[in-house]
Amino acid sequence: MSPQKQVIVSGGFDDVRSQDLRFLEEAAKLGELSVLLWPDETLQKLTGKEPKFPLAERLYFLNAIRYVSRVIEADGSAGFDTLPKNLKVDVWADVEATASSARKKFAVENKIACHIFKADELKGSPEPPPMPSAPGRKKIVATGSYDWFHSGHIRFLEEVSAYGDLYVIVGHDANIRLLKGEGHPLLPQNERRYIVGSIKFVKQALISSGNGWLDADPEIKKLKPDIYAVNEDGDKGDKRGYCQKNGIEYLVFKRTPAPGLPRRSSTDLRGF
Image 1 (cartoon, one colour):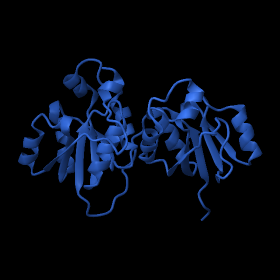
Image 2 (cartoon, helix red, strand yellow):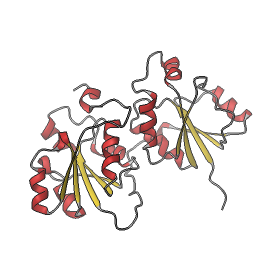
Image 3 (cartoon, helix red, strand yellow):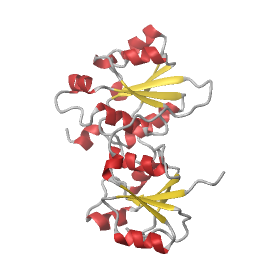
């Protein structure tokens, strides 16, 4: 069996959205995927402003994505259209929007294949298949809207997944509007499920089919979880009583960011 090709993508990956995840997912189908992550100064040089999220937070986010094998921090001398000489790379993946003749020239000169993804190839929000797991692990559910996904969400999912296989049930669009008002959600349910399901701490992401604070009741009854996990903000709607009635352990997690990272809020990021 021949070894996997070494694939690399490079960029700032500031404020990762579903389009970025689709790019990383498709790039990972070409081989083992590494991300060369630009430092803050390189990103600022390109955009003319400070990145929305600092390097440490961007690094944490990318390392949590199931399609990424490793993240390499580029040094301050990193260029937009070159790769470090010491990297073993077979394929440099890119998208039409950032592809350039300089990148193609560098790839040719260094005997690296250049794969450019067209915008049409990265459309949609396919449902990520369930992640593999070891037998005998407990089953956990978490629920929520996950409307502007950020490092705080990842930290919660990371902490919860330590207790077993994590199934995240994302609230359907109509119910999010019912609970939060018009203008919500910002992203449609399939896209939110795709984003959450792309995180390696999540066994599987589903969409709720019920209503109210316990809109995930139909899915919970099918899954028969051992644990229902919420953060402090989600400890409402008599979820505790629901779990007592159904013999499910109820765990409430504090909203604590990953070490060294700032506390994030979807409301603040979204602006409403």
